[in-house]
Image 1 (tube, rainbow, N blue to C red):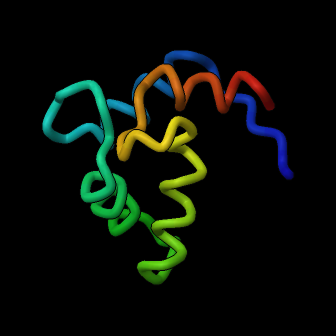
Image 2: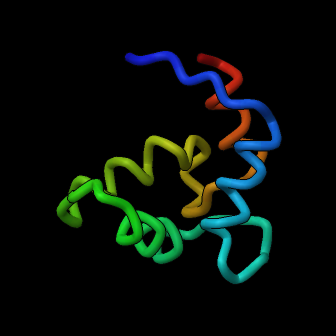
Length: 74
């Protein structure tokens, strides 16, 4: 796996871009919509796998803390 070194401000910015309803969590529809704005092409199954990678506690949401801890662990 590749190392990702993002400063806290960058992960906050990334999270805020994806959390479109501003509830402090990223649900699958927000995650999917944010991926549509990129040049990365994924099918629905691949999007689900990517979402589950970030949703470490299987809550159906990605929290800012979970996103930050993933980047901190690399």
